[in-house]
Length: 634
Image (cartoon, rainbow, N blue to C red; front, side):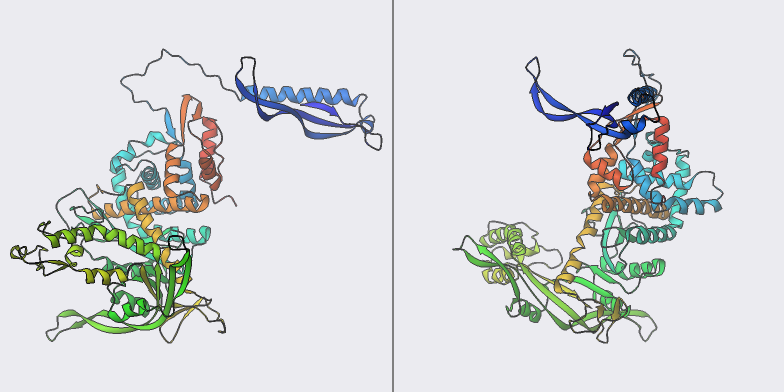
């Protein structure tokens, strides 16, 4: 820094300022050795205005000399501070590790992002509050924090997580026995944690509590024998092992709300009503719109939603619908079309998307419980008519995909018809395209005496199937107000036609958009299984299984919260957290080993500046402490 005199102004005065010289990149040049190097130009930057020289003569005998001496003093002070902040490190290249000692010089620092959301959601407050009544000497909160951190970074077993406590700057002072004892504690207070998480997500992330997405997945165990909970069922990974089902509710941001576990052999659609009751009783959710896939919404489930005076948006199989519905779908009347130029057909227009809708009653079948004449409780199916908004749309992209997916089935069916294929068990798709072929309905095997009969490939059946390619249907009882309707006070109301009416206009596109949000729950399952490696499970007791699912649920919520804040995806975030480490290069100095613009963006999302290349131990302690205050500073 130096003192600079600016040219005399119109009043005849000379301004003095403190300034410094800075280098600004200015392309490239060639040095004396002929090597291309960066070029710089020197520019002077004002630091601070001192005042006019003529005015300062009243205060100082020689203002210029005085402030030059002041600039020199400041420069010396700054130089001394720089020296004090510089740590000298001596390297001894001959020094060897002790073969009897475990040594780790690398520490994960990315966990501070997990720390930030963990404390913002007040998880620590809940566990520290509940553990006061246990009499246990270990810290339940620190065990849960370790399990969540490890699930996101390393996805280890409980024993594996405990072996990595030295990778973090936390006081993880407990044993493996303590960890397993704490699992039962976590399971006991599952509902309490879900309440705290939901309350804080509503408060800090403006959660929309009017729209809920629901789906089911399962987790397998590396065991052969079943028990009361772990049973063999339809595994999503096509594993023969016993599984546990998990029903998950999610909001429109992709942030999980609640989960419930079920026996492995329980049908997916049978999980919905118990999960609905649980989220209603535990978290006070009612009068909402439920979004689910067609396989989840039986007639009984729909009738329960209507009984609760709630809304639903579900997909519906056009191929499995009755003839009347299919005829309406194929009738061109009423479709609104979106077209584009067909360059392959003399620039004619081709339909790429079309859509129509109607309000229509539909008969569903509902399970009714009754007692027979002997007093035995039984169930029978009864008809129930509902009023429904039915939306059907056609996409040329869907049609093209359906035809491509069917190519192998057609090829196999034609081989069977020609007698070139004689496999004993065939897929249903191929068999449905063959005439004159008897199949054992129980085993799926072709009767041995049928191979000698004349078989035909059914072209007409294929034509009928192809007619419905590209068509997709969505059913809902959600409507909005019409153009001339008078708005009402509440956000929604239940109509006399048993429809769920929102206090705004609701178009077909709005309903379709609601349904499209369902992909986020599928992605959540992918993050949980692939990113967090939640399966296979290695715990055995039911409360330990519950605790494992609770840890995975919390880890998923933290990743989703970081997603919302940073606009990075969960897999990116997980990788950034894993790679952000520091290397202990001396007893009091740590050097970061990784940096990227995405890492800086992630840190900024939780109020942390991750650009620093080196930290003293004291600075690290302060940095980690700061991460735990995120969300509580205002």
